[in-house]
Image (cartoon, rainbow, N blue to C red; front, side, top):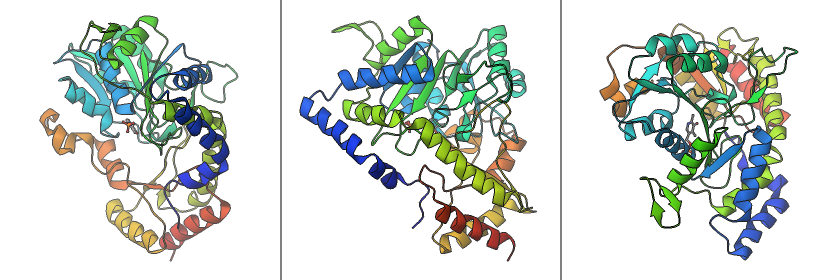
Length: 382
Ligand SMILES: *Cc1c(COP(=O)(O)O)cnc(C)c1O
């Protein structure tokens, strides 16, 4: 059976290393903190080229801790894309801040500086660009805007760890390349099992190059503690446990290989799907490598959401899953209606009606790709 994500085959290829790492932690009885957490943190800092990685319990916590460390206060406005996973905006509401949702780029699905600029008010304090589906937001104009208006930038990098951002364009001979998640005041990521760097449970991390912000985030993640049993701030309890850190330390070595495997699968998909007139293949941004957390197509028919329902049923009949990320704009979610002024955002609406994502993981064989592309082709050209 074909799956959206095949974690089992991936595990079996590195089973010996993983088993040894996990058993090592169990044997050591250092289940919280300890050498494995430090080793992973340091290796991730090296990999990303960032001075501080602060591990925590999950990606949602990372976003929350970042906003707490920046001292955001109830009533402050935080700009987010309307087309994203709920976690990005949820923590904003949880902290009593006000999410302000903007439309996204129709090609890359990512938030854009011009939309952000139009949404800035005197209450705006921060921007959360989401590197959606595995490629970087065009960060340079957003960083310039943030500087001009004195705003914080928190990158939601849960879907794009390993991607490279280059303000000059990825094919430029200039190399101003930075890893996503290391550009804003904070970067936040998730190690949820199905993410590009996933553990075998929950995990997350913050990234920053600012030592004072790193200290603040570390303190908040650890009960607001400055030294043992002295608590300077209201914090949270958010830790990456040692077993997950040991697994991640093994898997980090394979992250680039994993990204390449995803790109190869995407290339195969692109070749077939670019010949189907009813489909739009994912655009590859000029400013970013794409690590394909998701392979997301758009349907271009008179009634895309009806076509999508039929396609989903057709594929499911052949044992092929497909998912809709995301079917509802954030502002139309019941929990977020309180922030909605009733205005719809055209690109977000159109994407919610027309996108669908096909299986994408590190273990896509030619046989799997042939079966999926064959079925999609058969649907559109019966
Ligand atoms: C997965 C995800 C998160 C949340 O990560 P968790 O570890 O599940 O809390 C946040 N933002 C985006 C865009 C995500 O895809």
